[in-house]
Every structure is written in C-alpha cells, then in structure tokens.
Length: 109
Length: 115
Image 1 (cartoon, rainbow over the protein chains, first blue to last red):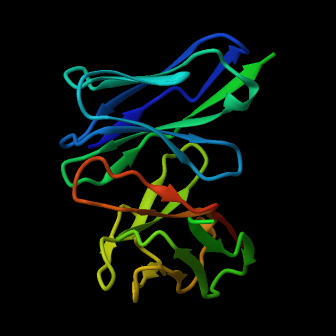
Image 2 (cartoon, rainbow over the protein chains, first blue to last red):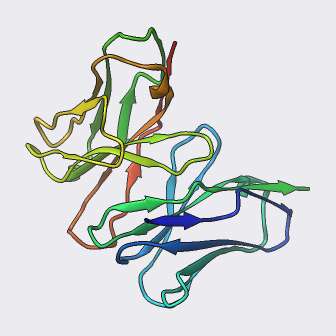
C-alpha cells in the first residue's frame, strides 16, 4: 500500500529552527510537496521537490532523498505565525497526490 | 480576487437529506478536485476532473457524485447524507500539465455535519 508518515505534533521556540520529517512509500514517484495549513483555513503550497537535494526559499527549505524515501521541511527563525499544520504529499505514478496526516507545529514564545 | 469559492461555509444536515456543495474557480484551471479532511487522517480524494466534461473517482467516492459542465464549476453532491460524511470538504484546482509539478490551489473549505 501507499503510505506517508510524519510526526503528529511538534513544539518549538520562537526564533529557533525546526525540522519536520516525512517518509513515504508509494507506487512511483513524481515529486513531493509541502503545504502549510493554519487552523480553520485552506492548505497553501510551500515547496516542491522532484530531484534529490535541498531547495531553499527564504526561511523555509525542503530536502529530498528519493533513495531513502525521505524528505524534511526546515523552518528557520521561527515566528509565531508559523504555528500551523504542515502537510507532506507525494505525487505517485499516476500523478495522484498521496497525503500525510500532517504535523501540527506549536511555537512557544 | 482570483481563487476558489466554496459554499456553504458550514452546514448542519439531517441524515438522509440531499446536499450539494458548490465550488467555483476563476483561474481557468483545467483540473479540479474534491477532498475531505478528517482529524488524524490525510486529505482524501473523493472525485476529480481533469478537464470540463470529464470526471473520475478518487480514493473515497462512495456516496458522492460530481459533474463538470464547464471549466469553472465543480459541484459535489451527497445524494443521501450519512453521519460518516461529517467532515471538512475542500475543493481544489490546478493548471495540470500532466507532470508531477501539479500545485493545487484550495478553497476555504465547507464544514459539513450530518446528524
């Protein structure tokens, strides 16, 4: 079966760095996405990785290792507004998205 | 403002009633999707449409139907609602080019409670 695993909840301190991991087992791979979802709101796109390595976009970076079925989202200089759920999703061989359950990130002052 | 509009925002429905969730986009995206989001589970695809006039079944299609008469509208119908259909429903669209880089734009969601 297809499976995406990510931690249910993480806590970090304002100004610090946090890494949210995602491991996947899917039938085929056509890219991995990270979305941010604030409570009660719609998911919004953060990043897309299809090749191995690190993609940096401001305070957010996303890493992919296809051989390990592994990705992480790195958030630097955490701000209170970063409190949200972070969703990992993989595009499978049919270009359908398989979603993880999301990681709720709590930022403390 | 360009994007996706969903209606209603929230609805309480008696079991057995028929309900249609509306979704309209103004981005001229070819592909549209309906997902449900339940606590502790990832987004699950109900139905999708790659282009106007075509629809397909997702992971959890039972009890739901869709139509895509034009590019902009993609309504989701529950023919006879059951309590297990209590969920938050998200409509999404993408400018799909048949590649993996298929970024979705989501509507604000419709919270449905079936009693």
